[in-house]
Each structure stands twice: as C-alpha cells, then as structure tokens.
Image 1 (cartoon, one colour):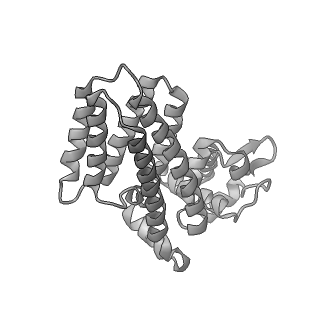
Image 2 (tube, rainbow, N blue to C red):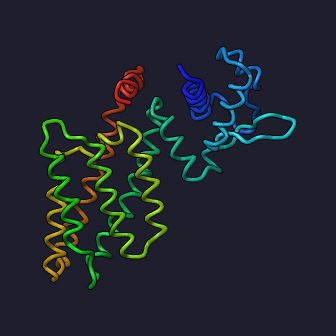
Length: 259
C-alpha cells in the first residue's frame, strides 16, 4: 500500500470521527506523534495526514498548538459540506438530514433553470441537447445501466442551461451538489427511485416543448412542478430506504461494498 493511500485512508478515518462527533469542535486533534503511533506510520506521513484533514476543512493549524477541530456544521463552506456528507453515510440520521437539504437545493436550481430556459426566445442549438439525450437513452437501455454516468450527463445538461441563462452562481452550486451526490453510491441510486428510462422520457418531453417554440400552458407547468416535487420526495424516500439498515451497521457495510 503506497504512502498516499495510507494518508488518504487515515485522513478519512479521522474525518469520520469529526463527522460523528467523536472529536468536538474547538478541541485539539491528536498530535502528529499520537496519529503516528495509533496508525503505525512515521511522523512525516502523520503530518501529511493531518495536512489532508486540514484541506478537507475539518481542522485548522494553530501555531504552537497543533490542529484544532473546526465546527464543520456551523462554519463549513460547501466543500466542507461535501466531505461531511460523504463521511456521514455510516450515520443514517445525519446523512438523511443532509441529503434532504441537498435534494431541496438541487430541486430549486433545476426547476428554476428549466422554467427560465423554457421562457427564452434564443435557445441552445437543439442538436447539442439531442446528442446528450441520445447518450442518456443509450445508457438507460443497457441491462445494467451506469447510473452514475447517467446522472452526470443530466447534471451536464442543466449546467448547459444555466450557462446559457448566464446564471454562473447557480451553476457553481449545482456543480458542487453534483459532486456531493456522484461520490456517494447510495445517493446516486436514490436518484433512480424510478427506472432510468423515465429520466430519458422527461428530457425528451422537455426537448419537444423547446422545439415547438410555443411553450407549455400554465396548467402544464403546474403539473410539471407537482410531478417534479413528487419525484424528489421519492428520491429522499429511496435514500432513507437504502440507509434503513444503518442502525445495526448493515448500511455502512453496504456503502463499503458499493464504493
């Protein structure tokens, strides 16, 4: 096992302890010497490990004191939130609460993007969007669809719309939300509470509306918003189901098996 793998694995374990509350905000992290002894590594590697934990945003270096644990939930930015979500998967209650927030943010950005784009006069070249939707369909038809790849393409489609709309901040947030979801297998699976080909049908329907140039009626928009909300409720419910065995440790084992 290479030193970089050791650093990553130990940093992840220390981050998990922070996420689980085993180390409290404001307290000092174990010292370089203590980390080296606990994980049977030399001090140089232990120093690199704590440096990686600092790059996660979970600790901050204090001259002459070592590394102090940050209040990651209170003061952490979106990158810290991403790491915190990943390390919270073995703790279902925490992970589910965070996933609800992630889904709500994603839902708002995507819904706003779709509605705003539908009202534009100057649209993206339909051939560009069609190529992405065609790829989605090809993947969805496979016996064992690559759900992560399908979701990544969908994020890319919304990213295109946001770029065309000039909504750069929303695009940046969507990118971060996409990273959070795509690196957690259970989160990816949750977004396919229904069959993968249903995702394709939605994009085909949207493309048809955009190609028509007439736009949907108010009633159609209201129906779409209702269906979109129901879909996201099912996404959260599926995530809860996937982590449902977490109380006896099965969910954590499942995560390790699918990671």
